[in-house]
Length: 282
Image (tube, rainbow, N blue to C red):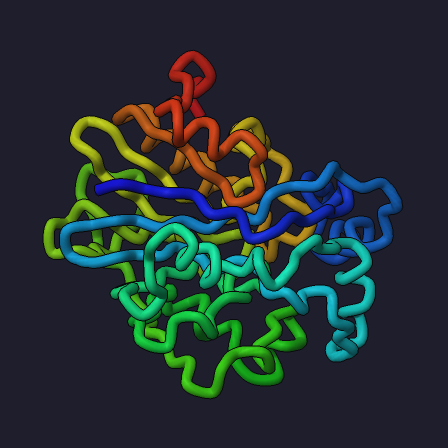
């Protein structure tokens, strides 16, 4: 299988968004009120060319990502804390067509989670089967989901993903896995914490793995951080998920690809795996 990166615009977030401190509510408040911003960061999506069909992981942001949202009432603060640079040409569908793929030929779209910079291109794939973790689907729907920051009012009316649970996985640091392909070489694994049902995609390529991490951490360096990100719903879960990822990377060479890491594309192109000298014992 071949894995390709597509950048759907850029985002700039507060520094407290990327690395947070303390309990959830005060950490979230510091994140939203912080006046210091990061550099512009990529919003990455992934196309997997697989013998069983074309797979897309996350769909990026839409051209109207900065359009004001007023419900829940704190959404203007979120939009101030996380802004986007994106044009219609940056959306995933057009970029796929420019590279010779048709969105109509995509068999599966896997969503690591349902925040708008990961589900903003859903409308490009009406023919695909969408896959999302059962836990993420449960927390993202309805008014409760909107109050949690999910922009479910922007989903197409036809959007009805397949919510998946995770079966027990022996010899794996993760509590379960969902095999997407019949070959068993593309797996969805639970990595909750950033959101209630966050998941990551593992592509097994012989002795090497490619770990498409969504927002399990914002950069590879932060994979070793015991500080949650600023909006993490469950800090303890997020830190535990990172520990499991590190354990996985000790078991086999792993290319680690967070969605907003400026070095993710370079690591994929050069085949750079997580350095075992940095993995430690945690």
